[in-house]
Length: 367
Image 1 (spheres, rainbow, N blue to C red):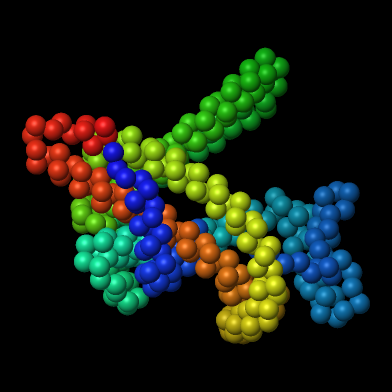
Image 2 (image 1 turned 45 degrees about the horizontal axis):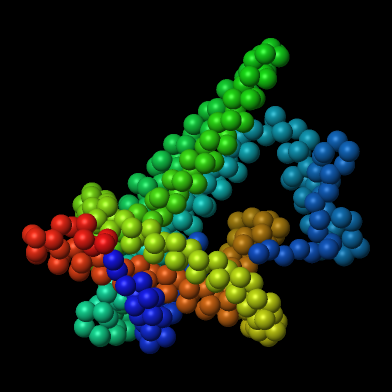
C-alpha cells in the first residue's frame, strides 16, 4: 500500500517550493476548462413571442442600435421559415468558432499539463528546478498530442450515449406526432426510464474514466508510450494497484470538497481585490477589443463590430479582474496533478520491486 500521507505532504512541499509551476497552473485554469448587462439594452418579446428590439431610450446610440436589431433580427423571428439558410450559416459560423477556440485552448492546455507532470517527475528524480521556457519545452512535443488523443478517444463513449439519447428523443417525437395515445404514453414512459438510465451510466462512466485518465496520460507523458500502449499499460498499472488508486481518488474527493467550501469564502474575501483590479482590467481589455472592433467595422456594420469587440475584450477583462482567484485555482490544479504524479511514481516503484522478486506476487502492493 502506498504512503498516502507522505504523498500529500510532498505534493504540498512541491507546490510552495517550485513556484514556476504556478504559471502553468494558471494556464490550466484558463485553458482547461461572465457576462455583463446594460439596463438600456434588453431583449423583449410581445405576446406573440416576437422579438421587439431593445428597450426604447433617448440615447441616439441606443436608438440606432435598436433600429439595427429591428431591421436585422426582427424578420428572423417573424418569418423563421424564410430564413432557414441564415440560421444554417449562423450555426456553421458558431461551430467553426467553437472549433477554432477548442484548437487554441488545446494548444495551450495539453503542453501545460504535460509540462507540469514532467517537471514534477524531474524534480523528484534529480531535485532540479527548471524555468518556464525549459518547462514549456518539456510539454511542447508529441507526448502532449498523445494526451489530446487519449482524451479524444475517451470522449467517444459519451458522444455515443448522447447520440443514442438524441435518437430516442426523435423516436418519442414521431410517436407523439402519430397521434396514438398508447404509443405516446408508452414512448414517454420508456424515454423517461432510459433518460435516468443514461444519466446513471454517464455518471459511472465519467468517474471511471476520470480515474483511469490519471494513469493513461502519465504513461504518455512520463513513459513516452504511444496512445495504445498508454491505455494498455495504464490499465495494467491500475489493475495492479486499484485499491490504492481508489483510496487516493476518495481522498482527493474529500480534499476537493474542502477546497470548494474554502473557495466560496475566498471568492467573497477577494471582492476588494476585484474592485481594485477592475480599472487595469478595463484598460487591458480595451486594447484587443478596440483592435477587433476597428478591423471588423471595415467589413461589417458597427453593431456587429461591437459584438465581436466585446467577445474578444471580456475574457481579458475577467482574467485580469479575477486574477487573485485564478492564482488560487492554479495552486489547486498544481497540487492535484502533483499528487497523482507522485502516486504514479510510487506505484511504479512498488511494481518494480514486486517484479524483481518472484517470491512476492504483484498483489502484495495492495496488502
